[in-house]
Structures are given as C-alpha cells and as structure tokens.
Image (cartoon, rainbow, N blue to C red; front, top):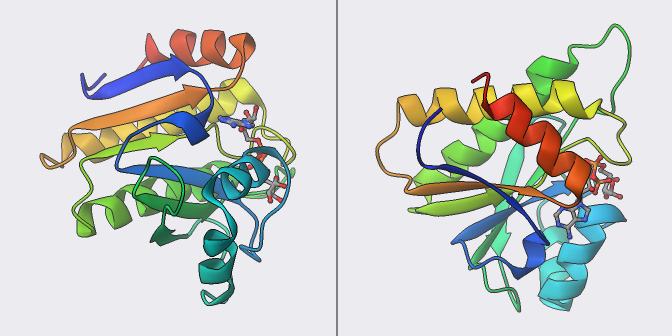
Amino acid sequence: MDKRIEIVKGDITQLNTDAIVNAANSSLLGGGGVDGAIHRAAGPGLLEECRSLNGCRTGEAKITKGYSLKARHVIHTVGPIYRNGQDNAILLRSCYLRSLELAVSNGIKSIAFPSISTGVYGYPLEEAAMVALTAVNDFLGKDDTLEKVVMVCFDDRNLKVLSTAAAGV
Ligand code: AR6
C-alpha cells in the first residue's frame, strides 16, 4: 500500500488536512452522520454555498470552502445506497477517485476521507474498506502531487476493519 495512506481513528471535523471529504446525499443540503457533523462544525456558510451547487449525482464530487473548519476545503461526494443488483463497488470507487481528482485540480496536498456509505447507506464495512483502499492506492500509483491521504475511522470496529483490509492492498 502507498506510504502516503494513513489510517486513523477520530472525528474528521477536527482534522487539519487541506480538505476533508463529506459523505453527503444528492441534495448537498445536509443530513445526519458525518454530513451533519461537518455542517455543524463548518457553520452556516457551508450550507449557503452548497445551495448554489444544484446537488451532486451518486459517485460524483463537488468542492466548497471549509468555513469554520480547520480544513480549507470540503469535497462533497455522494456514495451509493447499498442495494442488491446495483454496481455498488463501481459507484463507491468513483466517489474516491472523483474526490481525489478534484483535490489534485485544486492544488490540495492532504485530504481526509470518512468511510463513505458505511453508515445510513448500509454498505457492508469489510467490502467498503477494500473498495476504498484499492481506489485510493490505485490513484496514488499515478499521482505524485498528493502528500497525504487520511482514512478516518469513527469507531474501533471501523479502525479494525480498515487496518485488516490494508494488509491485503
Ligand atoms: N468523523 C468521521 N467519521 C464519521 C463521523 C465523524 N464525525 N460521523 C460519522 N462517521 P454516514 P453514509 C462515520 O451515515 O452511509 C447523511 O444523512 C460513520 O461511522 O455519515 O454515506 C447524508 O446526508 C460511518 O462509518 O454516511 C446522507 O443522507 C461513515 O462516517 C447519508 O447520511 C459514514 O456514515 C449518507 O450515508
């Protein structure tokens, strides 16, 4: 696995990477989980800017400023709602790749991701961890501008699953 990938336990709203990624919904107008936490920590300016973006499709990403966050930018991506018979992995991989592309095109050097889709959207954590790490690792294999990609785990189980998956990437 690329040495620029770090797996940490914590609250993504507290990180001081150049950008943090939000696991949003297609409205981009806020919600629960990490989305709610990011909007609360960033303050009302974030929602105001999000209103001007006209939403975001599943698997795509949009960038805003970070407002009261330590991070200068928030990259909002919309993970798939996990369903049988849907290309869940392709959509989830796309969230990571589109977010990293946006980061690079905006001169961002460090970025932090939550475990997209693994909360309300029901993506099994083990499967999601493998998709996430593989996508980030593949991207970094072709990029020499990003300096750090932090995979933020909110709880012990998430940390254990991601660490185990990392051993196989
Ligand atoms: N820092 C890091 N990770 C967190 C934090 C935090 N502060 N809070 C939660 N997590 P979820 P989804 C983890 O449900 O499944 C929202 O309502 C959490 O433990 O936030 O992509 C949106 O508006 C889990 O591992 O996002 C959408 O409607 C991970 O973040 C919908 O939920 C993702 O859980 C998106 O669902």
